[in-house]
Length: 152
Ligand SMILES: [Zn+2]
Image (cartoon, rainbow, N blue to C red; front, side, top):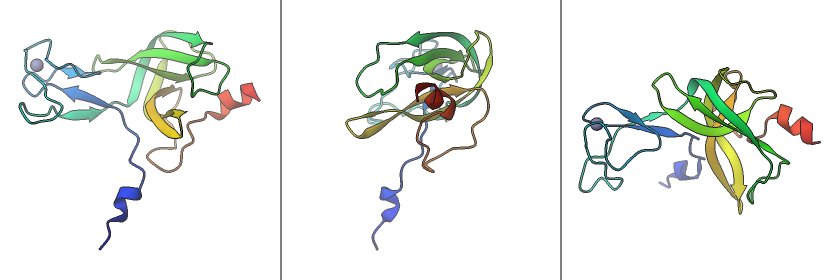
């Protein structure tokens, strides 16, 4: 029997890596744990692969900026780019889908398509004011209606 599951779009997700020895969480994952020195091997052939945890949910906006000179693949006039901190202490950057961002505001993070590069959707973190109803691979376009409206 043919396995059609390979054609189902994979769930959009960004992962933090957890050191299997001391439990320190990282994003992006280092090759060596800064706390205990445990090595990570992405191929899993020499050292054990580190467990992962999906990076999403409540976070706090640490800082943000407006980018106006965008690389190829972004079709917007500008993008808001933010750095957030999760309750675990992990800091991550991503696309800010908030109309008027304020440092210190509470946001929700999730993975979504942030741009299309030569027809290939690229997934990154997006930060929004409220928990999105759209999740998983159910056809989210990656466009925020609020932001889209500003450009039309
Ligand atoms: Zn460690």
